[in-house]
Length: 343
Image 1: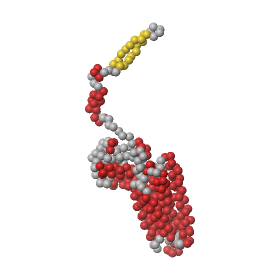
Image 2: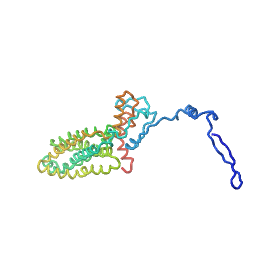
Image 3: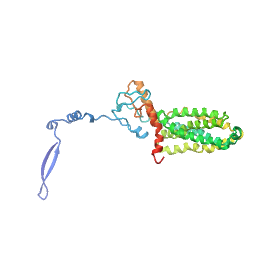
Image 4: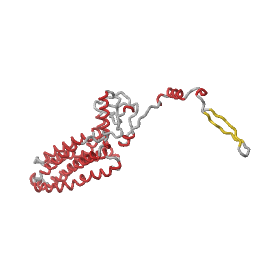
């Protein structure tokens, strides 16, 4: 740039100076703009600008977690080995606009089926907590225990739900919600079966605790599944519809348990819960994974496998071993419980 000074005269006869700037030609400065940029990049290579691809859609949908840095390497989730490659933005695997793999882009019918499956199955596992109370008088007579001892079945079930929620909610963030649902509900059905057959109150109390531990997967994770598929505008409506049955299931369980005990006997409370929960297990197996970070990790792994190019990555690829990640996820609820005043 070149500076010039001009003089002008106003109406009163006074003279004023005006400074003006004019762009200089490349020949006058000795260097062109391109040459200056090249010289800058040569002197400061660590600050060289690189093209950046924006992924605002998935950031907004999944909590705004930032992508990994350019120089960071990620670790394979299955093998635990480090992959010596930089996270090139051009190879980031992410949801595109209208991507059918994105749970928030699913059809309204599919979202309704997910909400119905979650609501129904959660209701089934909560039924087992209060339907038990209707058969306590018969258990006292048949098993020869006191009423206080028989009532411990309600206590152990609630303790199982509390303990299971701390563990299974963390595991769902590592392995996805669907595998945890399927395994936990299947184990719940298996553990309810002996409750209808055993003749020991100690066995019933232990089995109810373990069954409740598995049932906690629905109670703690099903709201997360609803949140995965519904946008902010319709989230309140979705949660309202979902929660109608689970919130009322303790009342439904007590009423239904009374009729079942009256006409079929106290053991049939377990049989009926096992049957209705089996139907819920079928529904859960029909719905897909809803947790976006797990979906993106799988898409990135599939892209690497099909292309043979290890540069494909997602912002949720694991960078630590599964043992360390498991320790972090399982300890987080206890850390929050002890360090957060609101908890």
